[in-house]
Image (tube, rainbow, N blue to C red; front, side, top):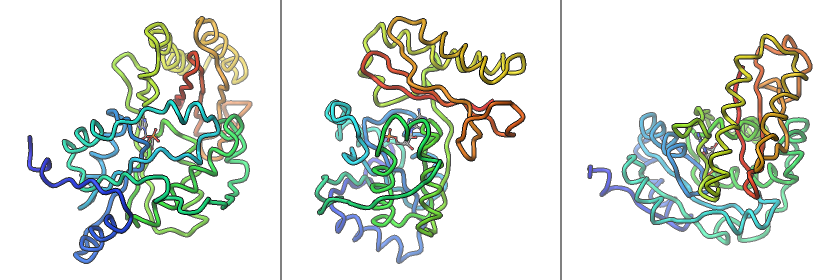
Length: 286
Ligand code: AMP
C-alpha cells in the first residue's frame, strides 16, 4: 500500500467530477486525462503512470461507449469490471476515476457527424463503419467535461490517434495529445482487453500476429511493399484460427497505403485479425 490508496476518488456524475476538478483548476493544477473502456491491463496503466508523472492531477474515465460499436455482440461481450479496475488504478497514483452511465454522457442521442476525410475511410474506418464518428463523439464529450491539459492515447490504436489529433484541430481545443508505445505480453502479443476472450488455442496462435509483423521488419529491405504485404497475410492466414481482415502499409501521417518504400519516410504497418470471433489489432513502424 502507498499513500495514493487513500486519495483516489471514484465519481459517477459530471457534476461531482467537475466540483472536484474546479478546486484543482482553482489552484492552477495541471490535468492529465486517460480515456478508457475499462478491463484495464498494463497497456492502460502505462498511460496512467505517464499522466501521473507529467501532471498534478490525473483523471481516468471508464466508459464502454455504445456509439463506437458497429458490432452489437462486441459491445455486449465487452469485458466490464469496475472494482478490479479501481484496485489497479489505486496503485498508479491516479486522482479521479470517472465512471459514468450512458445517460450521463448522452442525455440525448448524439447526432453530430464528424468529417475526417481520407483519414477515416481506410483500415478501421473501412471495416467498422461509424466507429470513428462514435470515438469522436465520446472523446469530444469527455474532453469538454474534463478540460484536460494533456490527454494520453496508445499507439496500438494508431488510426484513432490520428483521428483524435484531427478532431482537436477541427474543434480548436487547447489539449496536448500524447502518444504512448504499445505494451505487449512477454511473447509479443499486444495487450488488449479482448485478449481474455481468446481460447487457449486462439491465444497461442495470436502470438503469430506480432511475430509476423516483427519478422516483416527484418525482411523489409528485401521485398517490395506488395510482396511483403502478401507474405504477411499468407503467413497469418495459415494459422487455422486466424483470419486477416486487413493488413496495410501506410504513410504514418496520412494513413494512406504506399506502393513503394520511398513513398514515405514514416512507413507504418497496421493489421486487424480475427482470432475466432475476437478481433485483434496491432501496428509496427518500419
Ligand atoms: P481502450 O480501453 O481499449 O479504449 O483503450 C484505452 C486507451 O488505452 C487507448 O488510448 C488505447 O490505445 C490504449 N491502449 C490499449 N491497449 C494498449 C496497449 N497494449 N499498449 C498501449 N496502449 C494501449
